[in-house]
Image (cartoon, rainbow, N blue to C red; front, side, top):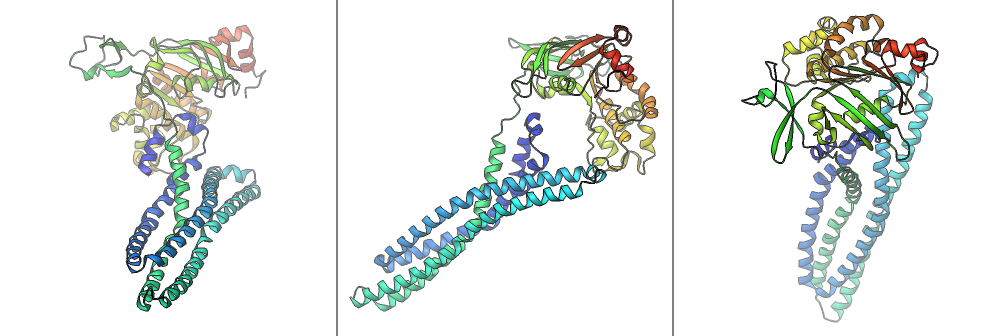
Length: 515
């Protein structure tokens, strides 16, 4: 089940992760799956054993006296009615229990991850109060869930004693009338005790079963979440994968990349250049709240395009649309003249490389983290990529060099070193289109100067989109786009925009604070 859920999660769109906490998602793999494991390993075998015992006893009781067995049927009716009434009330609380547990896990995960922020602002008291409140909520729903499920056990126990007494009384009357002998009554009473024992054992599993059903409901709800839709049929191929490369001009000895388009069953190839264009693109995450409004821009192969503007202006949204984390509501985005909605998402993203402001490093060696950009990269290529990003110097001074193990999202590295590894990861992918989302925001001025030449080398002959708040990093851009409220209000190169003395001039000279 965990494997199935994990595979499904990998196919969910980014919007799902944007609207659900990590702890809530993790709860499906831990708490919800654990309730199913507990039921399958313990409750289910006990139920099967009880069912076999009950079946054998029922057959024996019917053979001894079908008249007395009518009392057994009445008892079963009362048992099922009790389980139905109590189980229905308990089940709703078990569902709430799993939800509260997921919320608590999400809060714990968030607070552990942000422990430094908690301590620096001395919010330990508030954090503990919130945790106590959520824990109390979990306790209350768990108490009610278990109360209704566990109360069934003494009720069924009482039924068994009442049934035993009724059987003895009715059997005595039948014996007096000569309808049954004393030995049969004794045997039937013994079977009555044997009959109620497995029922009581089965009733003790109700708690586990209802909890498992609540967990299963949450897991199946996750599995019912619609996966990322991909209707693209244009794929990315490499010329070196073919015996003949006559269908496309390519002067690279290792081959070059091309889009494979299928028209009327006949494949057509178009060289991957990195020509990106937005044509009247509008987009909103929430209906009725536009984030981009009729945005048009172009980036010719090899051009460096800078996006600047206040927080919330729509800069990152442009990247989200280019990578197809989200699809446009209106307008069109073309990549080498092809509507990106026609390109398979995996192939589209293979042609891009990103360096994000928030770097994520995996548990593993430095070399493995850089290789994540290209799993086929050799050790020499990884070292060359690190050299381009000027990360080689600090890597070689680590205790184990490239084999140094990183843990806790690279907690044993400085923020600047983590950023350099992210740039190295992008460099080893060697993509035609590069996206830098505040790539040097966490690097000090001296380190930034060290990697400037390396970054320039990395950006050579590539289409580059740079999202920047530090305007000194975009002076050499071919075009600078100034965005406000989802619109491009100015465009031009550095000197031209300064001469206009508009918003960019205000931003650059500090007359207007860039938030």
